[in-house]
Image (cartoon, rainbow, N blue to C red; front, side, top):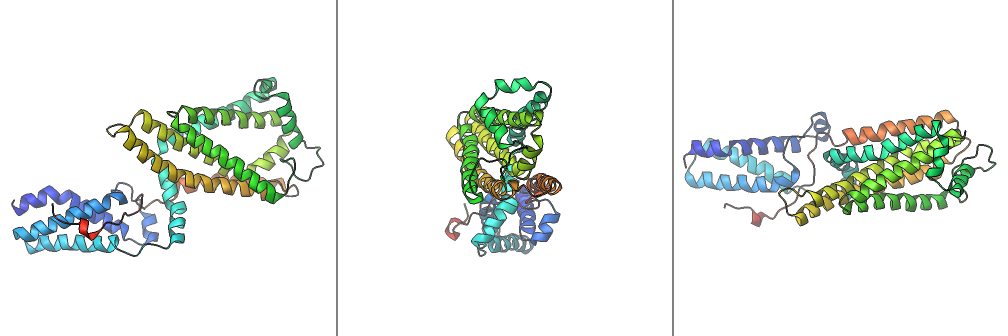
Length: 344
């Protein structure tokens, strides 16, 4: 093959690899200034690297120009430095996951995340508004004993020092909230295996029940103690439920519509994505449980501070999910053996 044809055939992939290496080796601060979306993913790098090694061997064997061989050698050397560099410390990988990989993964599944958010928040907000004009409808959702329990927990005239709970120390309730929150999150995610229908039902029911409690307590004049208790932990708790639902939906979609992949392969890939999403959801739920146990129940704190902290979290978490990891490619570099690199 003539050198011109060889260059023309592989020019685009060499350019893509060159752009990826420039972006991947840029300092973190500069990476954040430029979005790396549009580059190929990190998982594709090993195969791209093997191909350029093959091209270099062919160019040398066929006696192509020194300029072309020098260019290919440059790509191979820069790729080698990225491929075999020392792995980051474990704590750094954990930090990178929550700072960048997790929000990028959530954004990469934006379609199912949007659907999950609509399935949860629309019934929640709808029932809150509806109960303000038709408060009697709450009896269609809850049994009288359940309503009495909620009213007792958030009664403004209650002499209890801890609103929003019936008993227990902060530490004990922290453990209870973790168990309760994680159970809801895992149930929401796992129900997606029922072709996505389970996740849809769980999201709708959670939205309806949570909105029903909020709407009823607001309608009977118990809104002030209720909202000041939930505002602090509502953002991490509700958003993590939505993300868990989105993770479940993407598994359901892999089962229903695997595309050109086999159904088993689609499920494996969706399961890997779902597993990483669940890790982030778990961390968010533990954080929500911590806030609920040690912050939300404080009754001496002025409402201004309570609502300010809650509002700040409602701004910070969506901002983190929206901007986290911008300028970085998704996924970890998979080391490959040098024995696997060679001409085909």
